[in-house]
Length: 370
Ligand SMILES: [Zn+2]
Image 1: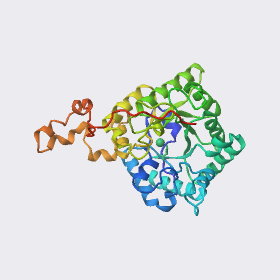
Image 2 (image 1 turned 90 degrees about the vertical axis):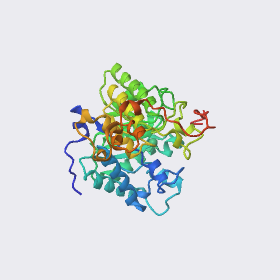
Image 3 (image 1 turned 135 degrees about the vertical axis):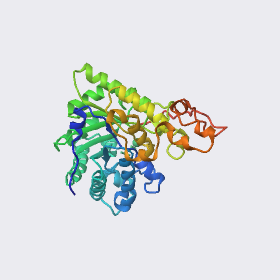
Image 4 (image 1 turned 135 degrees about the horizontal axis):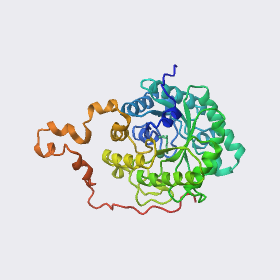
């Protein structure tokens, strides 16, 4: 299939453009009936391509400039342990996912990012040779297809992320690396600033944070990464793809430590107006690749694109069905609803949960990684 993109990821970022990322696939497709929680493997790229294609399309229509391949946890060691897909190989899933991402990316001017994530092999063996062989295999699957750049995501030990970057750099493609860590640092206690330095020295062109924690916490962590890079005299682009959930009480383990994870997260969902605040904060921190992870649905991505409409110079296609700051309510028949067609109303609203006996905060477990 022809690759129609106008500019690569680094051309865009080097030119100072904002790049809007896409949202969370595994969690959204679990809710839609195409991913099994616990396993979180992406066999639907082969079994139900129409479901994956549709979600890619919705993120594209919402304004995403990058379509990530639906290849989360798609290393052979993870697929083996998971045992969820006895008749489908990792290579089949990786290749099908690349085709789906390319097909949809070419419906707009989006880029395709081939994505790898943390491996069970690292957790059990810490073997650089074995872990690197796993990343190399997944990368080779991607390179049979037409991808624009590569992303290492959802890694909580910087050592493993560095190994992934070292492998992916051999492709000659740009590499982004996002850790799923808190402001306290990675699982070995390596602070975010030091993590960023190690990733950039390993060859990452873009560094940042994804998943595990809410947007404002992730912005704080990326700021620490930026400070670390500045102190070391290094330069890299910054990226952020946080949870679409409020997790103010979370510790190192992030959302996985919450009693509501993963089947009762709904009451923590970000509103589109929360996303506006997050995006402005991220932009002001100097982050230019701004997207989402688990919990981010297409309307959240549209909110990113709408908050950044002035900087980008255009609105996404999905904004045809959305007036800015509730403007479409101006034609509502009820005057008290019409009165909500203004920014101050939505910006200052404190949404009720509708659950009178529920706590607003939970007690997260503190045994992550043990
Ligand atoms: Zn996630």
